[in-house]
Amino acid sequence: HISRFEHPEHGTVYVAVHEYVTQLKLAENALQATTNRLNFLLNYSPAVIFSSKPNGDYGATFFSENVKDLLGYEAKMFVENSEFWINHVHPYDVDQLLNGLATLDSFYLHEFRYLHSDGNYRWLLEQLKLIRDHAGRPVEILGYLIDISDRKQSELELQQAKEAAEAANQAKSIFLSNMSHELRTPLNSILGFTQLMSYENNLTASMQERLQIVNRSGRHLLDLINDILDLSKIEAGQMIINSSDFDLTSLLTYIEEMFQVKVQSKSLQLIVERDPNLPQFVHTDDKKLYQVLVNLLDNAIKFTNQGNITLRIKAKPREKNSCQISFEVEDTGVGIASTEIDSLFKVFVQAQAGNNLSQGTGLGLAISQKLIQLIGGQIQVQSSLNQGSTFSFEIGVQLPQINFLPSESIINQRVISLAPNQPTYRILIVEDIEENRRLLVEILTSIGFEVRGATQGIEALSLWENWLPHLIFMDLRMPIMDGYTATKRIRENSQNQEPIIIALTASVFEQDREKIIMNGCNDFMSKPFQPREIFDKLAKYLGVQYIYETIEPSPEKLLIETISVEDLSMMSPQWLEEMYQAAYYLDNEIMNELITQIPESKASLSKALTDAINNFNSDRIMQLIQPLRRNR
Image 1 (cartoon, one colour):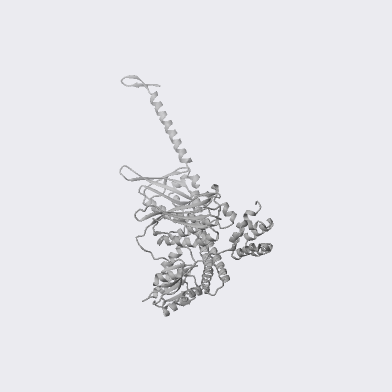
Image 2 (cartoon, rainbow, N blue to C red):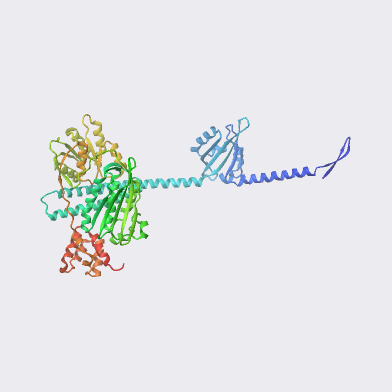
């Protein structure tokens, strides 16, 4: 509009002020809108905004109103009372908070607990920024607060769950360790004494056969125990690689000779094809490689009733000190459906062929896959129903720079005595279980060692001081004084001649074995052990030499392998079903009763089934009956 003014010199003056007033009004409106938006953001944001002076006075100069929603207090309580803020911080967090403020240079981010008006503490996340003027002097502290109580609760629950899982895993490891010890310790006596007894010359053929049954059953039980323990170690991340230099050709020869007996019992043929460029000595984990090859060959034989089992080993061109080696196990067995191949390596899962045989735990292939993955490979499968299967994998190995490696024990040779012109070696056996102590004493005295036994650590210390043994086999779990303590005492008090100490352990866990070496033992042997392992340790540490006797392997001729499905087809469906169920539940009494119902004209069938029961081979009985059962 136009305003009129009286000027002293010029009289009436008209001035247009409309545009100026309009612009001022618009600016005021815009400022108000901005203020409204700012107030909305401050008061309805999940973050509380505040400021304070940087002079050590922790009272606030400003607090957004939404602090009441966060902590239950009015904003003015923080501004008007400089002690109000710090007095409600959790006592355990006050020092950290004050130290952070005292050393604030630019940004500071921390978490602390603050007392809500409802009497409960809330977790807060606070970030501070120090504001400086143009001269660099601190003028103000700006900050924000966010409630992180939900996140903290989740973290607490997660931590508690983690601790519970770790405690459960620890309890599981302790249980497995105890179970391993309790099962392996009696198995050590069973397998050891049956092998010792088999060396007796005055045993009848019937007695030898019974010893073989006991020994074979014990080894089968040991295999099942090892599968469970291996799976547990893998799941717990306790399975590690133990690489060493070894003779690959000797390992393959041993595996080939070991399986010849088994394939002959099923009238199969085992073919081993070796690449002429295959290196003799390699560096990798031989125990895991051996376990996988044995498992794959065992599976191939189990699911093949006629034809061949072929093991192929090929070497790719060498690169400096390394080489790629491929292994392939091919069979002409029942094969695997394509829909089942993906589930082959899952634990406790078997293909239909395995279900038909009702054999195994479904762990073998799962464990084999994980073992091969540990040493850098992957098992692949190619298979067709009724045409056979091929399992293959490839691993990289190092090539040791040596021309010769001392072999372990000569295959098919047994130690019968000490070689002449050697010192009289004194061996101390420290073992609280009489059966295991007696087993070691008999093994060693039978070939000429001078041996004494102790039942626990204190007795071992006395014998060591007075008798000075060259080598001590030391059990670790003993009453009064265990093997760890006894070994430590011997090492602390040895002056001139320190004995070699070999720990005897039923544990399969690597951390236990590391502990054994760290506690002063030179080496360890895992129960159950074979006589050849004992002799190898003595040769390694004392330089003992032996006289050997060659053992000619005798194939096990089980009568059950001489009968076929057709031989059983003359029995009634009810009889077949009852026999199948009795074999499944290992009910020998019912099986023997059913055998009495077989006609006298089929005496060979009765004898074969009886032989199968006596040899704990009920799996074979089920395998023969399965095709004759009604559709189930």
